[in-house]
Image (tube, rainbow, N blue to C red):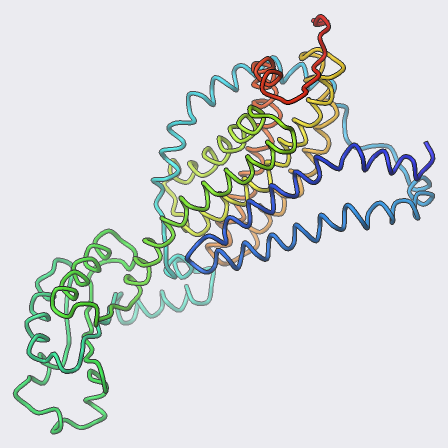
Length: 436
């Protein structure tokens, strides 16, 4: 074809799958904006903008650049280093049923396991190792002064009659090793006007009195979180809503309570939004369900590895990867399904799936390789524990998603071929006899 005619043909054939892939990725990232924990909206907006600009660049800039530089492209063309994938179709269909059976067996345990990993929520996950300066400083401080976990409780200054009673109850809570406050240190018998201002200000301000509570447990632990719950319950009993609890354990507990609820909202929103985009694109009720099953299974398997390896994982990383892996790797499934549905108009299901694997594998592996290498590189280069976890999860999740699309999805597309035909508007599937 003439170069402009060839570009027009390429844009016509690829427009729907590119637009669907871009839209699903954008919506997957925008789901993070529903989080109350504000790192989610920040991440979601930045990532979604990046995809939208990339989409515009691919649809508007790349075709023009290609047309104006096609002579250079022709002159610099070299043999392809990508092997032929004709034999991969036969392999995929041979081992596909085994892969499907295996995923059916493990998907439920993986789904349960991925939600029961050893999660961290606060800043302690960043300062837990010697890789970062804050981690090294924390270890040195703990070696010299011992490890401590302090909380600060603020209560109204004028509640001195209740302060001592409240403090005595707090000191009896399991996990509290020490407590310091004005009524205990100085005593209510001594008027505050007699206490030097520089000493008084350490425990009493214009509006509030301060209690310093030390725990004998790790900052992020079940024991520490139980103490936080108990102190807040007592605080509400004595002072109503006019009291505050701060500190590492309290902050981690607040983040935990916030992001766990956020995760349910973002996951459901991302699945629904992406499902609707695929439904509209292919005018099919079954295709969105099959594609989402393939990718969600890969996500659950990826996230469950941390549980089975008994390794810690930052909950914010767990949430981000759930959205990113779904939004980014569902593109592989969309590309594969688009090729299969086009082939199905001209060939039987077995020929269609083999031809789809042969033609789509190169694109899927190229994209998956870029994303997985970026993830693994990030995981190995960064000294921030959370970033390391994010990179590793992204790299591993991309590989699992690619395997799912190339070995799990083909088999279920063939298995549900009749269902797809019946539930797809104007499917126009080929009615000839299978060549196999």
